[in-house]
Image (cartoon, rainbow over the protein chains, first blue to last red):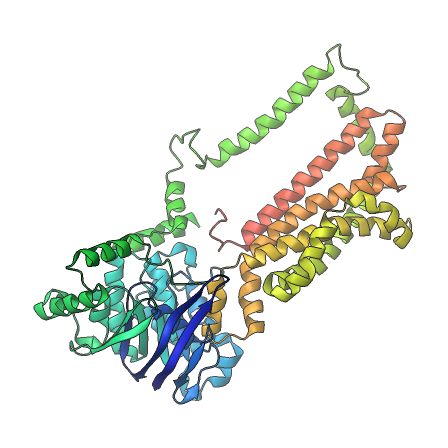
Length: 283
Length: 299
């Protein structure tokens, strides 16, 4: 698996203004990696993800998945959204196996893929939802809904899993549980993940690589390999280590340049009081 | 259902993950309902038996007021007959053959008009809510037609469709179709866009998104729109029958009125109300049964 973004850019033409959401950006994601796009709101990280998903059209540049140009959405690029997107009329199991009933995926399936229902069930078990296969989404908590959404995106074995602030709407404790689950899942499934967040700690803890974006216009400013080993080796204690804290400090400094100066503090304050989802979906 | 809900809650607690959805919060309130529930809490549920008792009280109070009013000197008994005289008229009417043929004729008309409106209105509304092109082409047109008073169309309808059943069915169709189309389109647009996006990223084609996502997601709302439209269908039925008919509930009311048989008019009016209420309850019950999954539907 190889995902390449070549000079990808996106400009929104409003009625009065023109906003460049993503300046020409290039990077490459290798198979099995857990790559996080980190940055403040309005830095184009979510835009980049929707472009890869094929849900929006790029203004310039192109995306290549295994050398093939991406022209629209497809099951080989599964996506998990920040908002809850389970189909409320389907049970947890039916939600999880939704993609296996679709014509495109039936065509794509190979004999070795095994039974679709078994695959869905084993993913639900992995997500700790084995007992809830027949429950409806209305009976689930927010964290459980997102776990089903992740299982649903993985059932069809996507080449890359796109996650747009998937834990953004969850409380702190559930968020940490979800991070543990993500590590477990990445170790187990080995799926390549492209993850979007504005949470520095989440980015370092989960990723093998962090791409830092800055805002207005959104552009890639730094590319870090994270040295904390494979997903299977990471434990919550890692977050308390001196090295981890040092990484946090460094990335925080990148996201909030000039924090020490008066202007910097003002800028930080402005950013903190602005709702973070404000310009995630420009329309 | 409740027991299953509690079991899920216990399982959740065991996992040290508290449910945070509104649906869960609602379920928790339900379990507390057995005690002395408050009367005047903003938008809070009250026990079912109390709700039904209040509904009954409303009807009894209306009946009592009517009985009181009908015996006053300042009202003309021809206009406001006593409950007793209406009751006697009801026994007469129930013994008459024409009641049943009226009911049958009216029911056939209303059902034909309503089903025709639904059969065309639902697909048209879905298309209008799904595609901006269809919306642009038909929505302003529909809004325009919707504001033309339907009874004013009766002469035109009679020219087009004659004075037989068809013109009555068409009047009911005109009265409900344009409302229904707009409501179905609105319900379709209310389906969260993320549901469509996520379907695409799971590999769905456009036709599959419509069939497997848009349609089931909009269905509870569409069903509720049908319930409202059915009420309007009965209204236009009576309009059609008052103007030109020689059978049917509306026609009979007009005929009673010519002979100043007000008790019988009241019997028919009450009958129309009972039919409406009954259909409404049927629609609501079926809605609850079919769409148990919906977050807004009470268990």
